[in-house]
Structure formats: structure tokens, C-alpha cells
Image 1 (cartoon, rainbow, N blue to C red):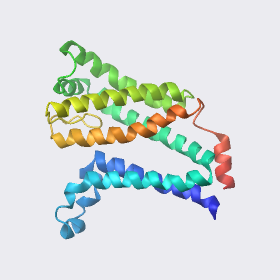
Image 2: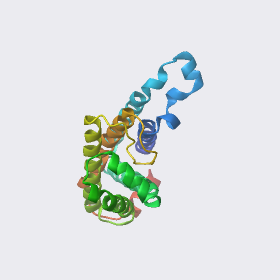
Image 3: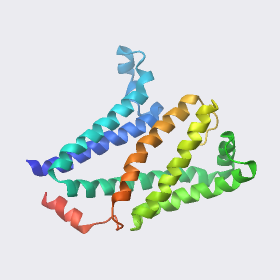
Image 4: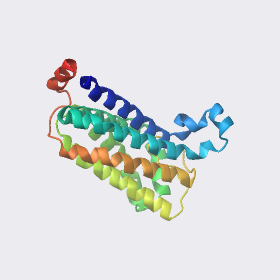
Length: 225
């Protein structure tokens, strides 16, 4: 029976973690609290989308524990693959909108009132390219540590910018996955929470060895399981 625990726990942990991050990032789409039957019972449930997302992330993390205790090596290898695919894919996805419309992205960066005016346009051109290529490299190259350091630097810059926006009470969208311009202060808060959550699994990749994501031994072990 134990041979099924590792893949089952990691599967449900991944589902819960992904749902939690999506619920935090896109509450208008993924929030369980938006369902009509839930709102019929709890009319104010829509206020707690962020809380539900955090709970899902925590539950997903807790599900890793039994898998870790049963087979630490296998659990770490599976988690590495999932995190590299997830974080790398997320940065590739986030870069597409910015590459497609650098002018609009530059106007969004300017709203943060953080960079000098003459650096806004160059940053709007460079940042999406860095996101795309290092997100791709995290998936398809063996240079896990190097790519992770760059991605952590990106996360740090996002977090600093969001804290700056909150300190100045700027109601702006974070510009991570959409370029819609000014929104509400809640947008910055949810983006900050999401980035702080994703910072931890990304930082964990620094403990991994530099190697390709496709590991034949991993698939062999999963088949044997």
C-alpha cells in the first residue's frame, strides 16, 4: 500500500498548491467563494478568496510530509520536476503579454514611480526577455542553480516594487499576467502574497544538483512503484 502513497500525496499536494496560487492570483476566475450556491449560503464568502487560497497552499504543503517520510529521494526528485515546470512555465506565460505590448507594460512600470524615467522603457524591454529565457532555461537546461538565482532576483524585485506601491498607497495592478492598468490596492496585496509563497519552492531549487529535468531513473522508479 505504501508504494502508492508518494505519487498520490504529491498529486493532491500539487493540485491543492496550484489551486491555491490560482485562487490568490485570479480570484474572479478560480475562487470557490464565487460559486452561486456558496454565496447563497454565505453571502460574504467572496471576501475570503485569499484566505481559501492560503489554506489550500498550506494543505498542499502538509501532504508532502507523508510522502517525504516514506521515500525522501523520490519525493525530492518529483518535486524538483514539478517546481521547475511550474515556475519556468509561469515566467514564460507571464512574459508573453509584456513582449507583445512593451509600450503598455512600460506605462504600467511608470505607475510604480520607482525607476528613474529614462530607465522605464529599457526595463520594459529587458524584463520580459529575462523572464522568458530564464523560465525556458529552467525547464530545458541543466543549469538549475544559475537560473534559480536569476528568478529569485526577479521575485525580489517584484516584492520590493509591490511593497513600494503599498507604502505609497498606489492602486495598481501588478502587471504579472495582465496589463490592465490601475485597479485596487487589494491587487497589490494578493500579488505580494503570491510572490512570497512562490519564493520558497523556488529557493529550494538552489539545493538541487545541476542536471536535466528529464531523469530516466525517476521515470523507472515511478513505473516500479
